[in-house]
Image (cartoon, rainbow, N blue to C red; front, side):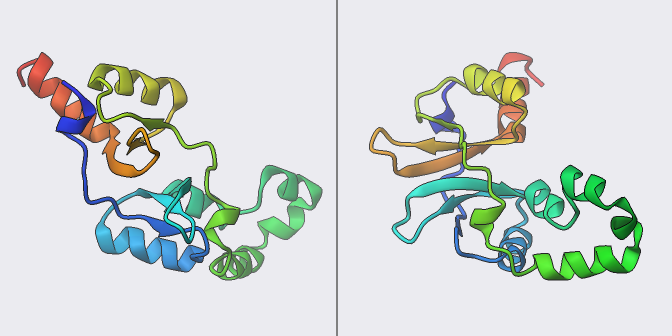
Length: 150
């Protein structure tokens, strides 16, 4: 079985200039946990997930260790979360996007996801156009169905 047979073709994308608030609203509206990020020309430039948005609400390890007392203060954490809402997606997205060709095998893509610790892979044409997206859940369900007859 190949990716093209199971990928979602209606891909929700997020602009690299969207704010965290806008990105979170898009993910919630479409009931998805992540999406490819595109520039103003529609070119894939990154990927953003709920995890990335969530991490941006909290201090990094470096920020915490520089002044731990500040970050233990719940009011400061609330303030940081509010300030983070206006950060741009391009400042928190993952830039190293794993992509696959529509003809990649499910088993191959599943192993890429396991090795890289990712939950979704963008499917692109040979020309680099976004063709679809496939999630770990998509692969899992289809492997169970086709290989294990569940």
